[in-house]
Image (cartoon, rainbow, N blue to C red):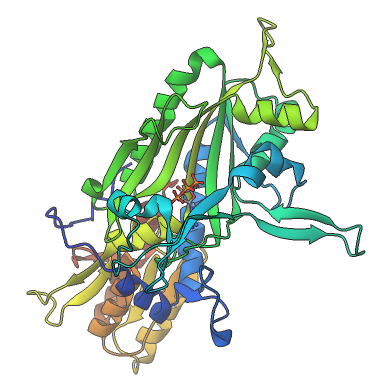
Length: 458
Ligand code: ATP
């Protein structure tokens, strides 16, 4: 996957963008709002506004297209948020899904022990004020809920702490209903809930968030081959949607980070003002999940090879990432404040989002608002384009200001209807990143734009 040819971005590394800039843009332009803001908000929970929901849908759709739709050996499911409580005993979450926390006795700040610099842990010293830290306390991250209405008969269960468990639960049904044979994969995008004790950094660490997972089921002898295959596939996937490829890396887990069943694991990490942080995990899960669910449910989840008749518990390669971290990282990657230059006297804020993912694909602008023919023609073009892609009509303020408004939300193309349009039915198409303009016949607009803004346009 490559960026479109229109993209002319500076290759030199631009400074890392402070998260506050993204928070402010998100609220101002309708990407993300604090949840329940009129009641003071809830920490670690956010809502997505009109542009946010478009961007989010595009991110999800592109993942689904490239993971499920274009791979014959992968199918998708959508599992529920609430499951039988035994699921979380089998998965180990009830017992082990805990964070160790310390508080500073002086400044009262709270920290996760695994996120503190080693020096502070060893010296029991607050990284902010140098004060003394309390003994570590354990907190379970699972969010509890209850099924049923009659007191005493209600069943305690959990909002899922990770989305992927549904895939193991539905594995046998998928196998029987979809004629899949090993090797094959199941994908899902879905919400997960964690009582994170230190939520923060905007969408980076939330209490309600969304994950995407591939669980790929293989014969044990092919585990290494498929692990390497998906590791590479996923790195390329992320490279294809970002501008700053030098901010992406694959980090192998050290021996102390590996689960007992994992021969290896990698994090795909992205560098922001928060430093290098996990974006997606590539995990060697072996037969752990299906064995545990076989044991706890009493339902045999082993697989019989239709040709060799060999019976075994499939091993699993997992790729597990976050929709919200993708959303945040893409904004951090795309945001740029460009100083005034030859073409643009005032400077501008631009979101260099990939045209596939940009929330609005095209804006249609009449050069002047008070010329009825310009307005009618522009509205007519907009009305035709909006059936194919997200299009905005805008006639408020001068054309330069309207271009900047669109640049700030990442709209890759602006179509301007001017006086020449009335003579020869052509329009100006302005490209966001280069600010270059071409003249195009109105009749050619739909196919020209579709080719540039949709990934599956043949
Ligand atoms: P971390 O070490 O950052 O807590 P994790 O290893 O617990 O993450 P996983 O359980 O592997 O994360 O979840 C898979 C993906 O889900 C992560 O790579 C990340 O993109 C996303 N994710 C996990 N926790 C959160 C959260 N609290 N808020 C937003 N996204 C999250």
